[in-house]
Length: 125
Image 1 (cartoon, rainbow, N blue to C red):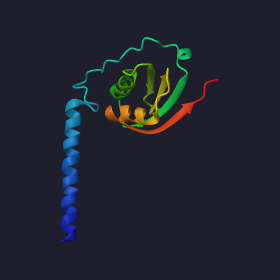
Image 2: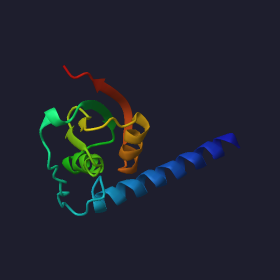
Image 3: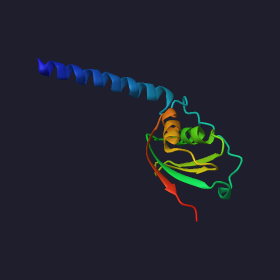
Image 4: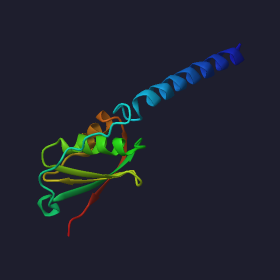
């Protein structure tokens, strides 16, 4: 009986995995559609000296350039924020004009569909 239950659970997990895989094949890993490049939000103020706060976010789940743009856009939509993502490192450099709480940053990344698993605050010289 327990073997049958375990087999049933494995079958359900396999079906869910296949459905997720098919969905990603159809729409891309980050839901941007068939091969389209996500449009990057431009930040007007790119002078680091105007941003007194700097945080480095470690983000999981980014697998392509569109994923990186999605994370950047989620952060750059906020007033007084300039974010740049390094896809290979799985990190985002976030420059802030006013301090933003860790939970707020975590929520922004999660709403974009990714997982924030670490925040390092960089001290300005």
